[in-house]
Amino acid sequence: MLNTIICHRSEITSIDNVEKEYFQSVDYNEKLQFADGSPSPNSIRTQVRLEYSDSMLFVLFNGNYEQLNLSDTLYRDSSTGKTMKLWKHADVVEVFVGPDARHTKRYKEFQVSPDGAWLDIEQDRMLSKKSNHFWRSGFRSHSIIDEQEKKWYAGFAIPWICLGESFHRERLWHINLYRAKAEEHGLELQSWCATGYGDHCFHRPEKFGAIVFR
Image (cartoon, rainbow, N blue to C red; front, top):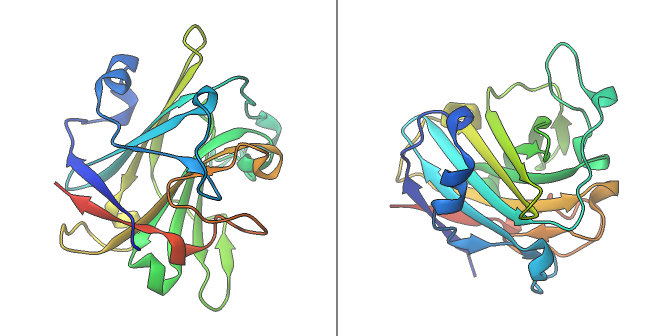
């Protein structure tokens, strides 16, 4: 069965200007679960909302936390700003998305940590199974940590054109959404569409769901 997620027309003009109040006010219409499909506890509950403009896909995360692992600037590429292998040493929320990705096995991967470190990767899982870590998408992100409420908010602004095509509402866009806890994803491995566990469990595009635009 193909999961679907509603994507709403957005009021956002720049992800950099999104304040905590906006993250708090929107209707998060989907939540993540453990990768095997079982519910995650409230202490790490993670909700998500998709919004769009003609030029951008916006993905908003709202997550409870007990303890956060932050990024290490040692792994940051000084020429690009991206943090290589970010998922190995920091908590991350992730977006995997591409046109008809369930069938083409080609999609783009975006990661953001609580302290704003980021990574974008071009994935081809069809024949070559190559990951292009030097790809530049032009996406932007914004993270907010609310220590008093034990919440972490993260927003992605992903240009449609970097996904390989310009935006068309009628196009089939496949997506999966994740949250992972450092140390090769750790014990808090959550996803929107259940992927199961095992090696490269996130990289199973046949498990992705579809975006429905409103």
